[in-house]
Length: 140
Length: 307
Image 1 (cartoon, each protein chain N blue to C red):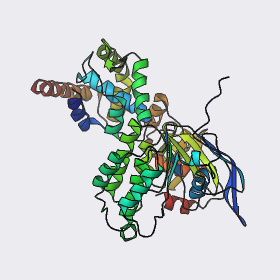
Image 2 (cartoon, rainbow over the protein chains, first blue to last red):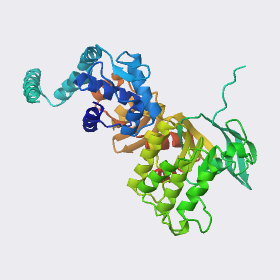
Image 3 (spheres, each protein chain N blue to C red):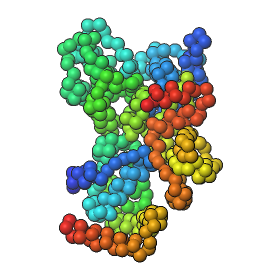
């Protein structure tokens, strides 16, 4: 399981200097949970594994994991490790839905206005992209 | 009575003067155990002088250097806990690497021969050649291997990577992280290659002209500045009230680095104004924070060195 997780992360992961690394680590784990690659009640890699994999300080990796423990996304099993909590995925999806408008729609609208794309054209594009995404999804 | 344990490394008002020059000017520091620190600064900033005094290899003109609360100078018990790998580490004239490692194994109680053997393989180090016949990179590898396999409670690496190529440096960083995770201890890396080691560090100390200019957690530095680019008036209106670290202008365009963590509202506002926001890498952030903090500094020179 951990191996599969790593292979997948290798594609997605880039740590940058824009924000504290522990927050980026937390978000990477969240994304895996949302995508379903990290199933609820499954074990997540240890902080040392995260540290070695991302080439970051182990204390920083631990801080990222602890952030998710505090928010109830992960929980600790004494002497065994960290696990994804039941209901974590739904909770994260709800958080992301509420951030969706300002994170994605507003910048889209702003750019559209700059380029003179009107509401109708934009709606059409969104519609097309949605159906494309749906086909992609069914292929996968 | 419960006393808080002494920090791994402590400098109290350290001063080191050579005739007219203050190599160290009132340096005070507390470095906790079990962390990786970066000691950053230009050549001649005082890094090596500071490390020499902290490791008992030199005496300060005034002030105190303490390792786990004790003065290391001529103190065998404390010195046994310290490993200092100098940039120009000297070995006995006719030693080869194997003999150097054997000597180190005798001195350092925590010496791990398996780790040393693995690193020798990683770096493809010739063991029988005399050390003075080794290349600059191989010489650095000898130091890196001793510094890591010694597993001293307090380890100082002074510019450990000179002559090591990119692959060898990555091997060093990876092995260091791996081993640190298994055996946490206090490690101080002195370097001017900030970007390369930034993610390894928990805490950053920047020193210049014998003084400490910055002493902060790497994580709290990361993302604490942003570069705002766009038309000059709009940029100026937007950055109003923020601490400016750096400013570039080109015609009617301006790019200004400010010390700020922008929230969603501010980001939206910047986008509304047509301003570009960009990430400031840690290396640049350290350079700019440092430059903004000193007035007498020759900026361009400092930038060159840290590049």
